Length: 206
View 1 (cartoon, rainbow, N blue to C red):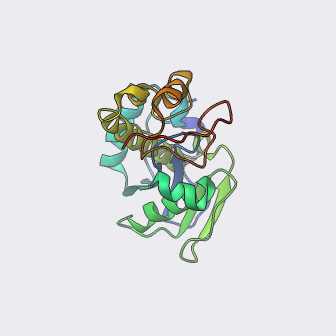
View 2 (spheres, helix red, strand yellow):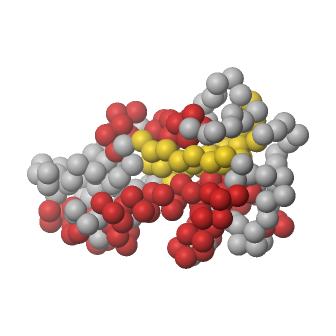
């Protein structure tokens, strides 16, 4: 899907910010979210939902988006907070935090998915698969994904046995096998089903 298939804006209220998150399904690490306000004329042939791009393409677009966006911000919510308030609330909180950090306040917000909570009395619209429909949401999905991947690759150096440099905290067989063998770390989401079986994990790595 090329940029031509993506719409620039949902409506006529400007500036309009797109929001998306990354890492909801992970067993470990924070959830990240991004908010992006793009200029009217932003175009790039690769721009798409981050899940449809290669890692190289995402990193290439990250630099372009960060250089050309009118405003952008990335924020995260820790795994401990996810365990306290659940992943849906944590994802929305991360998006609110990203919106807080924008250098320009939007007048309208579009959000990937179907759940959001009002932000500062600014009108918003949730859009299912919005990251494949609107440029600003696609851009936000790329920033959230690349910033989260970078975090997980860096923290993987401290916990190499979990293969986070490859799986980024998602529930792969190798990740779950490492949890079964070594236990959890302070980065694991203890409210999640960490193993396929229901055996309680009672030991952890500091």
